[in-house]
Image 1 (cartoon, one colour):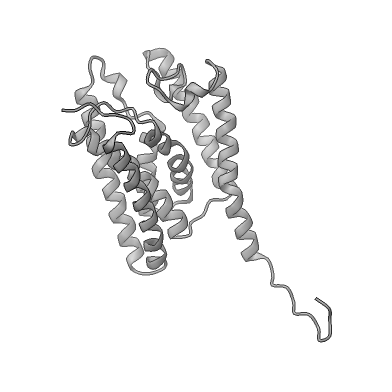
Image 2 (cartoon, one colour):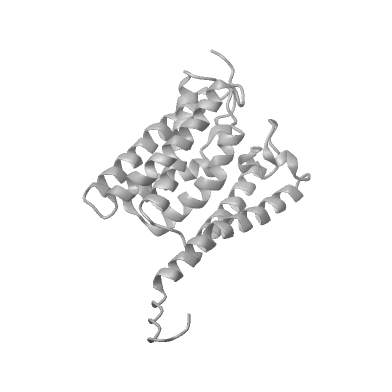
Length: 242
């Protein structure tokens, strides 16, 4: 079995598939929005996410060398893969928000710098990419397709949930000798964190960057929603200057 090569042929094909799927699901979501088919498509996508997510977690534990504690589904990408199917199935606002923010900013980081050793057709390769791509597609489908856009309340909820996750995972890392979320040290493989300072400053920098980026991802939707809710401008009287 070949070793996975970052930005090799298989990686490039996966990125192309990610973009193609995201582009295809947006018009699909708009086509089924408000129809009887909307629930069916959402549930089908939810099941698809789980069909890749569950085997990936099982394989990670089975194949781990040494302590299985090192392979627990505690990364935010793992949690996003659980939030996404729930959001697709129920359309709960908090789950949609988690899928949107985590999927578009954190899951995509795993696409850019994947922590993967085996190439296609290894089952881990297939499950890894299936899970990550479907989470990103779910965020695009729900938001741009079905029009379930986030607001500041969703932003605040996601920040709170992420903060609680970070505190709990950091404490777990300290007690178990793990490094989930790379909260206790930078990953050994090359990653975007290499552009930041050493611990703990890179963690604080991450917090600031995430808060700003998530706010920027929220603001356009809030502005658009206010524009739709604002009363129409009354017509000018005859003879008035424009």
